Length: 215
Image (cartoon, rainbow, N blue to C red; front, top):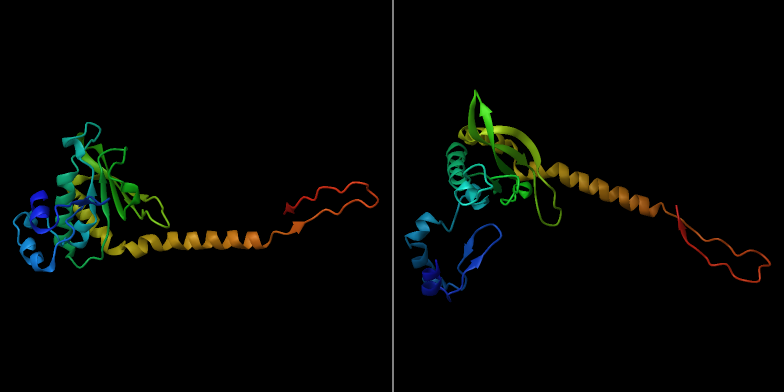
């Protein structure tokens, strides 16, 4: 990537919070040649809606806290989901965390997945808990746990049944309504407050300090 940045841009590389790389300052004349570079066949510059929002921690390959392998599972799951549902899905974020430390930020994603071990029929396997509806930004809200102990081997099938009915708009619609209702109640409460200013006592030689009391 550094070589591409030097050959097609100004040698600058930028990292995004969503684990993406940006090569800035590429002229229009060089853009076509850049997109034909072999490495961009593996690290695509125009990812699908699911792959574009895919984030993963390093997993148990590089972290001794992680209880499952996340990176390859994230990519494999995204590919299978797209094969089943097509690439016409609306943009959606899917974050993987390999343990409760949450380095994949699974609680602020449309679909968040946290790794765990579970026992099924006497056998310990890799699994995840599934969260939905998380978001960051102007109206942040943590995701809500939807499913527990989903085996990683059947996760693509499970997500393929969820995603068509849990678009980003649907997952956040109820939360936005709650935020608006809460704001409305706060504004009404503020409007209902009255100011009461005690009067000074008649004949008093000193003026009483006036205090404003809200009720």
